[in-house]
Image (cartoon, rainbow, N blue to C red; front, side, top):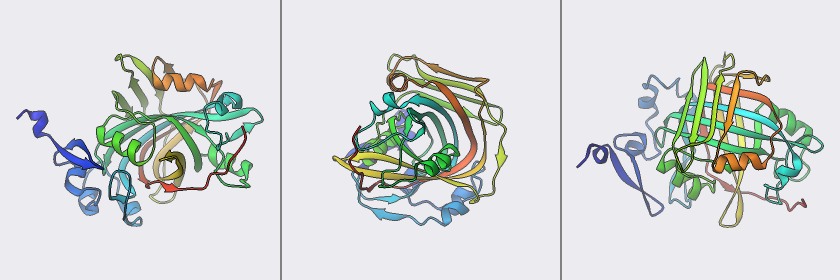
Length: 306
């Protein structure tokens, strides 16, 4: 047996055999973690946030699972850009509407994620997303916009969501309805520098980011918890997925100086170009945080006209 085979084990997810690291968190705990043991990992800045979020067992397209999925050590980067609403609407399902900063101008983002310690083991992720109005009747657009710009609560529709691991792809695609595929994806974020590179099918650059990390501010655990609601369809029915982020160390800048985004060739690049982004409004980086990702739940999405 090769060393690579010895270092991995096959697990079943809804009838699909998926490879995970042998002795990793998923292999050991199957989403039911020993928080005391995880708290001893030097990369994890405490587990109090998770002690207040009991897990529940639910049925899902990937079989019975526990929710939420816990991410104990996370770093992220987000570029928020202005884009014409006409281009955005062309990529949105008709039931969803763009969150507009001004008439004819909406918000799109490119995001990169590094999950160093989580229930399904280390992986990286990237996304091209659209800020949308909450899928409810009578939404207060102005207040949604203010909280969205502050990244306190965002409602989103994702066009691209590549990941670096098989279990993240199967769970995200089959379980959550996200447009996920596996590719080469490097994300490195520290207090000085933020870099990311998404590889296309030919081994070249799909999207790549290089930037100075904005000055970081520390937040006590539980004092700054932001949320993201993402809309997907599973089996033809609309669902919403809630993600809660416990921000521990983060910073932002409204200047695009020193931020380089390379739009190459590939699925992410095509999705971003289709949105016709005009300029960067904000660059957010979280060098230390934690996330609880809940399983999707059915949601009522009103019919809207484009």
